[in-house]
Image (cartoon, rainbow, N blue to C red; front, top):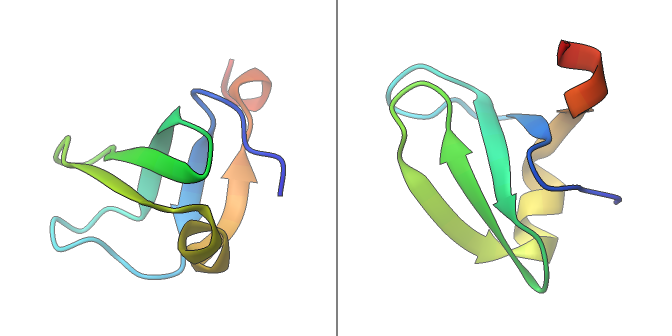
Length: 63
């Protein structure tokens, strides 16, 4: 999966704050995400994050 910095991703499961949208802050073997609802940051292995993603919202699409 081709993830870029500042892409927004919609995950399959909802965060406890109610948001499903996360922003990509770091890409590598691990991916760092920030919740768009509450600002919570999480770092997880790429494989686990890729399984949890429903769709990618590119930076160009939001402007």
